[in-house]
Image 1 (cartoon, rainbow, N blue to C red):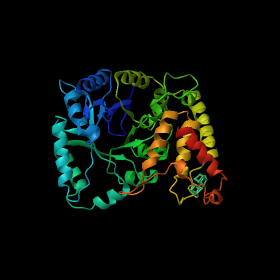
Image 2: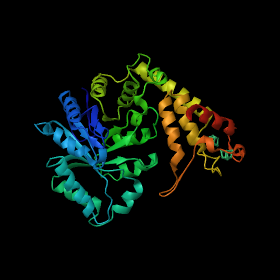
Image 3: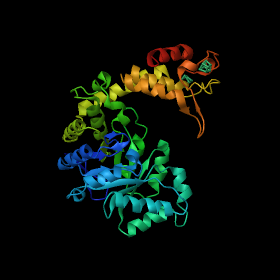
Image 4: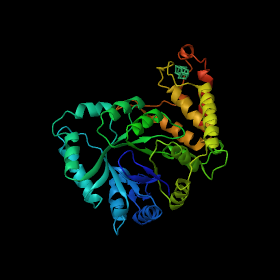
Length: 376
Ligand code: SF4
Ligand code: SF4
């Protein structure tokens, strides 16, 4: 196992972290025995960062992780979890923390995240006396948490002001082969001495499936798409740890091997990958740049989203994932209450979008192709 410094905190984290968001489940409940076996195998093999959250796996993830960390395992790891509460008076936030300490059977949590913190919520809640941020400080003072950190799903540009608050020791964010939008932000955070843990290095499962196109990105060859994905993330020197949500023991074994490589990618492999990714980006943009000038569509077709999903198939060879995403567009959420069918197939060929596209994309024909390929 390789280890990397967590910002300027004087802590070395394993390059691979064990994420407990995809523990094996049956009938809505976590299967304890295989979960505990996997977590302990990872720790015995050098993983020292384990992560959960209040609501993962039907709120059973923390409980099972707490059991896995008995028999001396708690002392071997840095334990991370997340508080999803954003109440004004902070009492619900604090109750969640107390609950989590019990579930995890521990006296303290090493990395305590405000779950999905965005810039607006920070600005709203920071000044509130007794609110979550005051509670954060109180928990630090009481020794119940060791590091104040946050997980991030906001727009990439909003990471910068959150880093500039200087309040946080680290951040947990999305970054992978298919989504590099946080690349500049994570470099900024690392430059300010923060630890950077990457969630979804395998693209939330998208990169878990075999793809000849992705395998081709690494000239030396890879055993799987997941290996390419994790090596890409770990090749970024600003990343402390790639946190992978693992469901099966063979995935744990493979990821352990990947994170044990002395060098995630050689200089030549990095250069090759960079060139290939630029080419893929150009190829993807040939089909649509995602500018959304063509919207709104009177019939609710999510035009660029249909094309983006098609690119998972066309450019990256992730066909099963593309089909699944296309199916989901049938009930696309457009507000808290409302969902619409936004699939290519609901296009009525009114032609309103055609003139608005600066790329002159034959939108109607392309939409037909999307449905013919992914709607089967
Ligand atoms: S042609 Fe189809 S996609 Fe374009 S605006 Fe009309 S219904 Fe929407
Ligand atoms: S206007 Fe053209 S390029 Fe822009 S999102 Fe629509 S189809 Fe894509």
